[in-house]
Image (cartoon, rainbow, N blue to C red; front, side, top):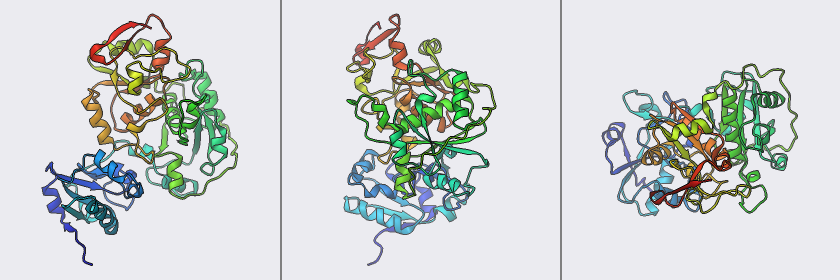
Length: 436
């Protein structure tokens, strides 16, 4: 059977880049889309304006729902590209079966588009801090992967009060790190500089160590006593933020967490790896104090036209229907905070994640933020209930290269514990502001 799909040239593709009725679809991995050069292309990243729809997702039963969520309509003309022609044809066939009629394939991304600086491309500004499972495996195997020039690394399997999540299966060589090592349960804020120094040294981490963090998604249930114990990958990004604040120079996050390692089919270990302490962290903590905001500065942000306090909580939390946590009594929000919707509840980040737990296409996050007035020209301080979700939103903005982003560490927990602080409830247009 002859190939039913039209193959277009580089010149033809370039001529329709600004056509709103044409959707360019990149079906390579999210890591290639973000900027990693997986086929030795001259420039990493994606064709400017392309949407990310990895071939891997075509195995999901709700693949077409993902397509629709990206506003790819049957009315659109589609141009699909990847590293391999066969992959493009496979996805094109799926679109055809779903009722899409105008489908073309582009087969010259590596040798023509990325090779010529005249053709526009885009990438995640700090893509190298968001690594793939294959990248991590290369380090473990003693290879030197892209964008790595160190000989000192530690892989941390992060969890909250759940060593069983580590012992039941982890990346070979990874040590376990409880989030309690870096944040205090009395306030859920980052620990003191002295405590952070000791904890990082015990875990074998100095300021010059490349730290690779990941966690394990285990279907958190708000009804559990400790729901955060099943939300390990949010905890991993929480620890990443605190390490950056402390002064670890090279903090990496495994894109998709432990799920990405499993999906890649790599070996899983149950060995309880010993921690090898270092004598000295190597720099004064905090090395990047500007990454953390506390209540006094949060109040300044609320009164500034050049800053946003961004509430990364669910809508029911934001309007005061629920507190979001079994240990927080007060319900409501900080008046004046911008809504940065996390997803369903305190232990999920669906609006910042893909179905396979990799980070959502950064253009989509930025578009949602822009509509809410969250823009890179302002100082944006992200917060949630206790810091986990706020840290993940912060990390997304930091990966995008936004110049001034931070985490309001105290969040709703600390704010609501002070009866002198006002709070709002209901839909913001009819906001009632009271004392906490």
